[in-house]
Amino acid sequence: MSRTILSMSMSVDGFIAGPNVAPGNGLGDQGRRLHEWFLPDADPERRRDTGRMAGVNREVMDEFMATGAVVVGRRTFELADGWGGDHHDGVPIFVLSRNRPDPALQWPGVTYVSDVTDAMSRARAAAGDKDVLVHGARTARLALAAGVLDELRIHLVPVLLGQGEPLFEDMPPDHVELELLDAVDGPGVVHLRYRVRTEG
Image 1: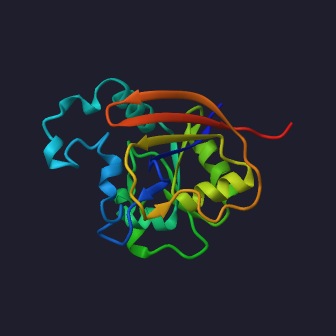
Image 2: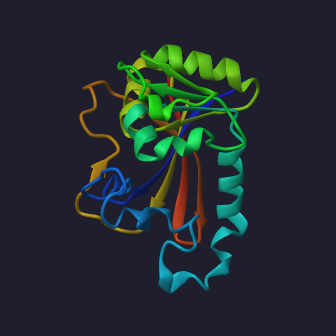
Image 3: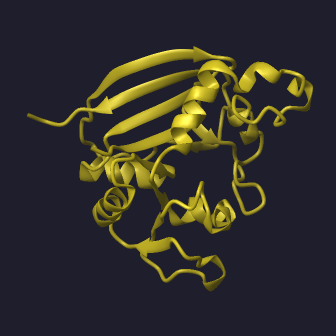
């Protein structure tokens, strides 16, 4: 059975992007630091570090890229220029948005959906027995609140950004229990995997 999974790189102080996120600066100021573990050329001083995408980090990225559908918030989708309509290997992309799509960001395989539960349901059906990858902090928070997010995979980077875009800002006052399933050290990152516990 497919799972819905948020996979997000995050600083130790809880930020998933630096400040001043905008088109052309989608990760914010200094935000690329959070992605150096899988983008070896993100830091020019570390370009010779060829081991960053071997071992655990490679396994994590391979699993990430094996998902069967993507659910993403519209802001995240547009900051990424829609990945050119192809996130990876042509998997279906479901964009969570209450507004009409931008004609410039309409591609085959991209569907705009206004409700997070509906988006997750459609993505699960499209993914078959593969997992659904969730992108975007707001989308993750909505999915948690609706009870339709199964796992959090946090790639914890040993840096304090001090400011930027937090992952869990403005959460509802509901208590969400997580079960740690795995914690693995990789070069420049700790990969944490949590199951979202449901009541009963």
